[in-house]
Length: 466
Image (cartoon, rainbow, N blue to C red; front, side, top):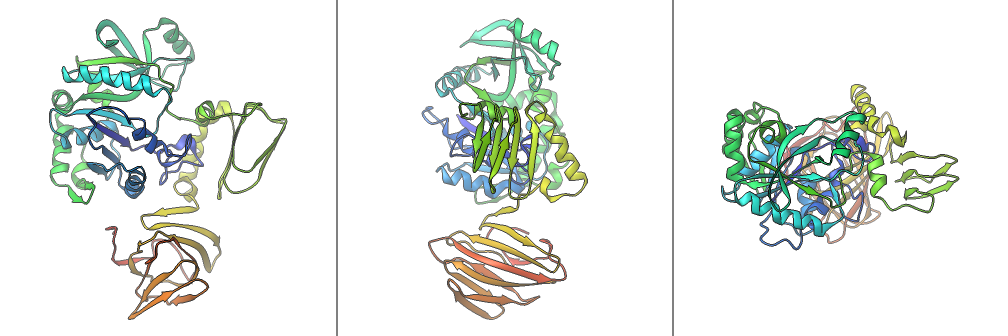
């Protein structure tokens, strides 16, 4: 059985922590590991697991690779989507990358499951049904009349292992309808998790959307393989229909079955959902960071950078990051996505990126931003190297704070240690490398007429960036 990890979401409802270029699946929200890492770690103990297949946005490839490496999970491949096309094409490319008789365990990268034993038991039963040709999904046993989830209606026909034939997939209901679903006992929350044989899924997709299957096959045939990365052909893949697996296959096939799952599942789809699964104090407050409260109850308060004090409030969400402060009533957190939409329309960078920017070689933090100058704090991982590059409009002054820097500029190569510095004039070809075994930390002061991040010409790059 091959775990297929889907990591295409942007997590806009968890802004300002989750952002377009650093979405929630890469964040450690409920444990010391990220949601992505927990998705794989909770599979430990299952027999017969092969190396995972991951499908992610091309912009997230280095975060995906590094986080898998951190938990010693070597992937069979990381398939890069040049454009988002929803879950059906992503799963199709994973199925085409596997052997036809392989069983695929399809898991979104951003869910929480607390009852691992119940989850493993459900997977065991699903695998048996998948070997018989069924397309299995897991229906979460509802605990409330939730209007933020789609639902799966079961048929009365059972297939063994507690599974039922699927009668229908249902869109997100209004509150009255959701209450009727809860009372009937015939409806489950749609988890977005699946188990099926690769060939079974592809055969059904061929019946209902041959164009999608054909385009995905062509895009993979034209893909370029770069170590673990499979770079799908962008021009071909851009022509692929965009659709979810529910609409493309599961609603139409006669082979869909649902296994009820009661395993402490949560998709962390909002701040209130994160509050639900986070440890709370005696007043019902979920607190992270440097926070002081007084007469405050049932709130979620997150402080990343500053001291946050909260007085005399109830049912609030307060999230402080280095470049943003978000405050919302807990019953309005689904509307956070509308704030993100406003930020995007205003071309605000806070919609997509944090002040701390992650790169394959490490990260940097824009400490100060003025009209003629920027100041960054740059951290380079041991043995990592930035691209050989130049800038048309800016000069750079580097001061080593910690570690040792190997600097190339023009025809000169320098080894610079703590409290030493060097200057890179405008237009000079240069590179920065950490030859040591500890992280290299430098302060970079940029000056010039234009300081945008797009003022860069790369001549060579270890990470094959353009």
